[in-house]
Image (cartoon, rainbow, N blue to C red; front, top):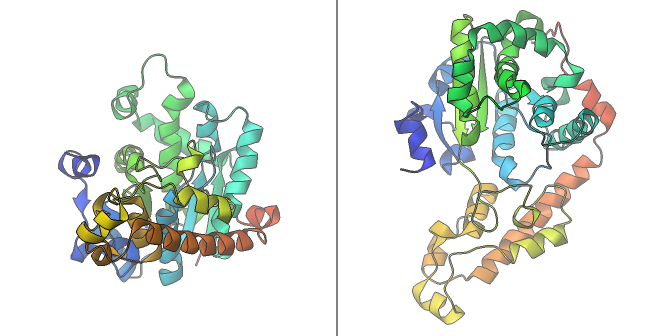
Length: 349
């Protein structure tokens, strides 16, 4: 049983089917594959109730292509339905987990991360960043929620021990506050939040949903996304920059990385022309399909296209993507970010 199946069979997530999906590419290509109460979110959405997106990011490292599907999902709901998007940037978690050295580094990273996110095309009037050290109200809310979180719950969820620092032990309360904040009257009074996340974040949301119920708040709905693999076929990580295409990479650097990517090709061109390749294990095929809606499966299995051609195709598309993204990023200022910082007593339509 793989990790995707475990969330459904052992942890109660539901598989996305035709009744719980929308006409959006990441539902169609299977990256969004499971959910918790997404059907209830859709019902509220269709009934015109006030709902919002809450989807965070960690400022311990730069964004890479693996982050793109979740941000595209958030952007889809904002553009299609006009929803407000709340984006917690957990600079404090990065600090207590020692992913960064100082809080000053965390704040600097958070501002840059927010610039990257705005460069995706989010509406600054409907996008709200929660940078914790700039928003101490989040801790007041987390303090109210923490009475319904026991140490045994935290240990069972995260595997913490007596040696774990108390900052990490308390942080699940802050994470719950992040996704429940839009429900509070002074932050918009939304009736439900939807949280699109990678599957590694699901433990946080399982706990947050329990906390919501105990505090008589609506449980956040969750969309679970599969991982995009690194160029080596393993989990993508900014800590392995040679296997991840960073959004701030020079396009020529990205091209060189792609040329070294793991594929499902044969040992020789002649053999691949004769027997075809294996797209099911090919990173290049997955990037083309998921990120750029380009499906070369049939040509691949028939040997009508070889790995070098696919790599060049992907490199061309990534080059255009990075050029467009970085051009938009160059126009996003720190002042633009500050204008989107979460404010108490929001009056949101």
